Length: 348
Image (cartoon, rainbow, N blue to C red; front, side, top):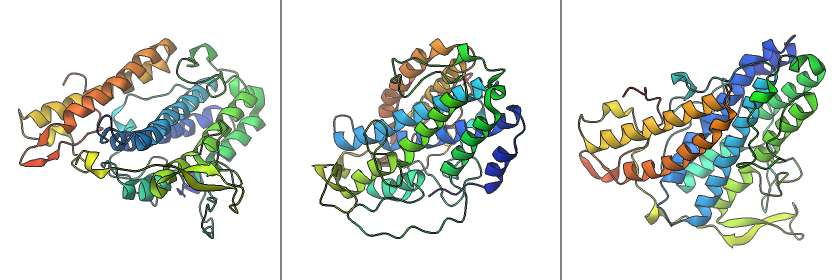
């Protein structure tokens, strides 16, 4: 369970105007984005055409994190703010903590492994009280506010403010292109009711509920989705199990021989030897990711139709990643050059 600074929840509760919430919602956008590079790196290190069940699980979570980032961005637009996505500080330092003063977890950029999924990804997505599935567990006492607490406080504050919170919303600038997400997931945020629906979707898809590990789309919430990789089986309904569910479905096997042996926690590409193939490939990848952030920034700052270009850059990024991973690290021929999620100036 991620621990968030209680002061942030207090700031939400103390807000007197929508402007008081702008920086806090910007922080939520940055948090929803911050998990994506770690998940993408693990996904990209699965060699193309292999480890399909694991790849599908990780990819599905990445897609929904993009959805959550979009909902948070639309929410900021709806209360009169402007999302900032293409600044150097938007991408956190890896390895390092997540944004919004979240402590207790250092997030790395590593190749896909059971250890990474269990000890990092599941910790990121862990709900307040995980449902013990085929195992007894005693929830740890809650001493800190959680991300769910933050979102709950935000929902209550927006309901309290009512229509005045949305008086300066630029609703026509929201991105609600249902080419990429269904209308039940991505919809216009125009008032406290639609804002609450978006916030609840973010929490439910990430954590599930205390009695049900499934999200509104009847898929396992992120925590349990990742747990399938650790348990090696799909989560299924099981009337005989105390929780009503068990990991007794189709196998989910991680074949480590088909995972690129990527350099862990790759540094800035500028630290690689000048004129090396590794530096060129790593720089191109960082530039591709920066271009994606630039496109997303445009999408949520008056040009919602730019989402098509952004999604194209996302797919292109996987091809760029394969080129990097096929390039040996200088002086370490058995190790792939790492995927560097750094802000790369477009003049490079």
